Image 1 (cartoon, rainbow, N blue to C red):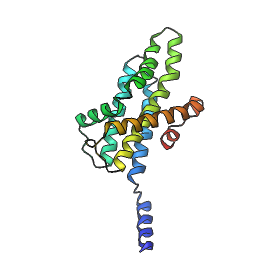
Image 2: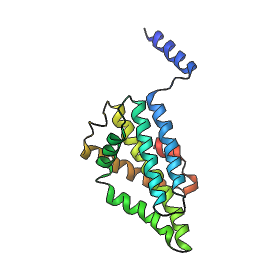
Image 3: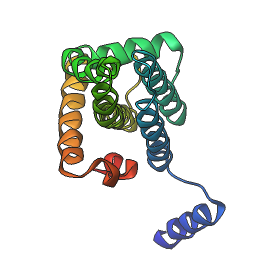
Image 4: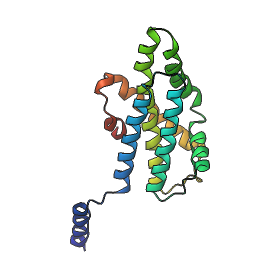
Length: 179
């Protein structure tokens, strides 16, 4: 019986079949890199809108991987419920990074140092929270806002701390997701 499972697993590996968790990690990694890249956009507010769009797209792809209904309304409601409690901290950091770009000379450098890192950390934390929720059998409709928000805040702080310990160039997107 055990050898049958091993043979089936070997066939899956040979066929290139990956687990949902592996697919989710790839999606999160891709969107973390995209979010960090959008953090480099030199125009205040445009960068934040692009980052938000990337995060919505990531959650939609994660929902698809786990067979969930991923309508825009459901994704929007889920993201608002998760980030709702974290909005003051998150928006202050993200918007500060975006708005500081408008300050002549110094602002561009400060914005380029702050926003890509914050965008990557936020996207990684959001992706991890949703992937874990879906992996546990949750849906976009079954989110417990308080529990998910607390989980997001813990993920965000842990990833932010990890990113702060390394120079920005040394923090690799996969390390944030795998942390």
